[in-house]
Amino acid sequence: MTMSGSVQRIPGYCALCISSCGCISVIEDGRLTKVEPDPSHPAGKALCAKGRAAPELVNHEDRLLYPLRRVSPKGDLEPQWERISWDESLATTARELERLAEENGSESVAFSIATTAGTSMQDGYPWVERLRQAFGCPNVVASMELCNFTRDFPYAHTFGSGMPMADLEHTGCVVLWGHNASSTWLPHGTRVAAAKARGAKLVAVDPRRVGFAAKADQWLRVRPGSDGTLALGLAGVMIDQDLFDRSFVRDWSNGPFLVREDNGRLLSGADLDESGNSTARVAWDKTADAPVLYDNASGSYERTGADLALGGTIDVPGRDGVIQCRPAFDLYAELCRRYTPERVEELTWIPAAQVRETSRLMASSGPVSVYTWAGVEQHSNSGQNSRAIALLYALTGNFDTKGGNVLFSKVPTNDVTGSALMPEKQKQKTLGLEQRPLGPEAINGWITTDTLYGVILEKKPYAVKGLVSFGCNFLMSHSDGACGAKALDSL
Image (cartoon, rainbow, N blue to C red; front, top):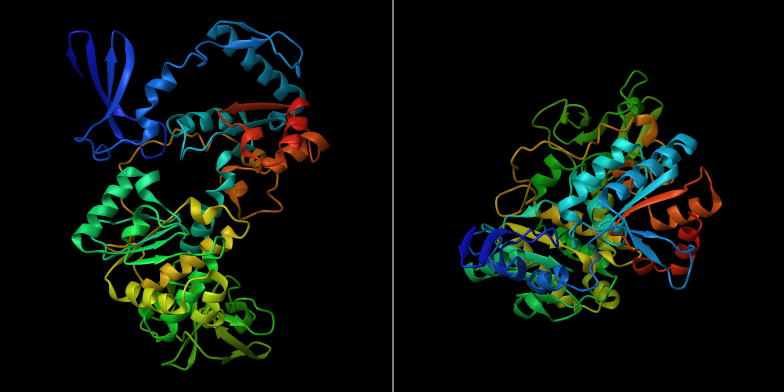
């Protein structure tokens, strides 16, 4: 901190979104008057309009500075409030939470949290989670249900992790898919610009020619919502022209796993022998002309150096006779070939020639890195679109390699979210878990607003009678405002 007369300059970071840009807060006579970039900070070369507007937020005349308690009936068109102390507000809230938990169980209270990507909750989210976990609430509505769910979770189920960060310092080709970094994430945009200046190729998938789309080597003006079609078409060209990393697909994916033609299921060790392992997967070793087992627990094949088949129909000797199978990659390739560049042009409005050019560019420009964001996420089919993009990226073989999308090591810190505080039996009460066992409900206890509204109004499978909300405005962020108002009125 530096001080000159009554002016203080305090270094820190902006907590208004997930970027955490380095900044300097200027305090004059005890009042925040300006927030400036801090070039000495790794993410402080620039600040967006929201960060610079922090003084307006802090000093706004309508900003609440003290707890208020309603003193007029709920639903009053002109609600009346009285100021109370922090001690009274905290004690009242804690007392009511304890009462609801004792009378109806902790699951009778739901939590909600605003997005960590675009609000100051990125700074407080871990502590809200700790409170929720300690209280025993298995249900939380995160306003990210409208976007991040359809990106983070398909990538996690495809890669085994969320999409890693791009190693832009060493990449040879940057793909920005539905992500206008120069407007929405300035530090990321700065690194993309540096990579472009260094000579990296740039592909921008965006209906609008804004930001980096105006500077891209390939601007793919995709029809909104057809991103999955584009990804399959690009992959089809890479496969047909043998532009993909065959060794990566063979050694680091489930592409070689055999799929039964009769029922569409992965072939298992138990299909080959009665005493076989039902969780072991099966590939075909072309050299030995025999099946080879893959052990999920160890993550390895029973024989090293096998030449695994990625295509063709294979007759596998099974315990009950011959089982006709195809490698999973062969089925994926067949799907991609349905989306020829001409078919892609028809569905996405991107010229067929440009689809072919972009495929060759991605295959020939060195390590490829990709980043997707809100542009891909605001569609009813966005989960499948994300899966298609993830599989396309896998073809490059650049996952977790220098210049690609890398699982960078992190500074070890203690997890304060308290994920071990809630009993497993309580977690199983998460609403929607049976319908979506692979979704956010199973990992974070994140439920949808629709689910919460339905349970509040119908009181099934149990009643939700209370809500603790940290910055999440259902009525403004969810389309069915009337249903939301009815549900919230009934709490």
